[in-house]
Amino acid sequence: MTQQNDPPGQVMSQGVMSTGEGMRIFPDVEACIDCGGCVVACKRTWDREIQNQRIDITTMAEGVAGPQGENADKTGRLEAGENPGETSLPMQCYHCENAPCVSVCPTNALQKEDDGFVAVHEDLCVGCQYCLSGCPFGAPQFPDSDDGSAQIFGTGGIMDKCTGCRERQEVQKGPACAEECATDAILVGGAGEIADELEQRGSQPFFNDEAMEVIFGAEDAQLFQTDQQEQ
Image (cartoon, rainbow, N blue to C red; front, top):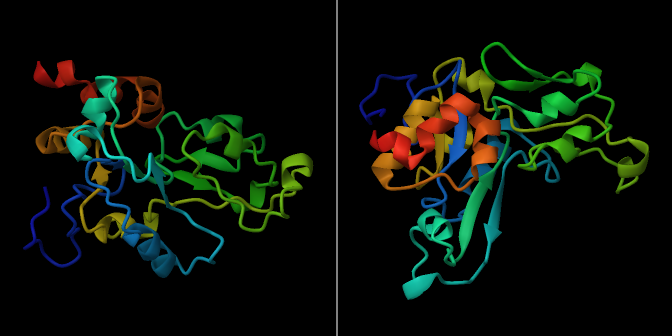
C-alpha cells in the first residue's frame, strides 16, 4: 500500500495501490459515505458539464438502518439474507475485463485497449446506445442526447464515460475520484491488490459472482471468494 511519504508523482490515496496497465477500479461499499467528493473531483478535474456525470453514487435503502440500528457489514448481511441497511455505491466505468459494452457496440467505438482501459473512439460512435443497454453499471453517458428520442432513433450523440483518468495514471497518479475520496472507498490496483485490501478491511465485494467475472474475468474473480482467500 502506498505510504504518505512517497516521492512526488506517486499516488497518495490509501485506496490507490497501483496505476496503469492492468489496473482495475472497484468500490468498497463499507467505506462509502455518499459525500459526493468523487463526483466533484471528477467534474473539476475534467471540466465536465453539469449534465455529464462520469461517476455517480447510487444509494439503496436510503434512511433504512440495518440490524442493531447500525449500517455496518453490509455485504456480510446480504450474504446472510439480512437487511444491509442504507448502502451507497460509487458507480462508474470499472474498465471490465469482459466489458459488455465492447461486446455489443456495432461500430467498434468501444475497445478494450492493450493496457486494460476501455476506451471510447469518438469518431466511430453513432449514438445507438447499445452500450447503455449492455453495461450493468450505468457507465455510458450521452450528454448530448435529445430528451429521449435517442432511445427510438439512435440519435444519442457521442457516448462519454469514466476514462479511469488514463492520462493521470500514465504519470503514476491515481484517478481523481479515488485520490480525493475521504474514506478510500474507491480502490485502484490489480485484482490481487484489491482483493487483499478488501480482506484486510474485513470487506467483501458487493456484486454477485456473475458481475465479478464481468469486471475481473473468471480467473481473477476467484481471488475475491472467501474460501479461495483462506486457502
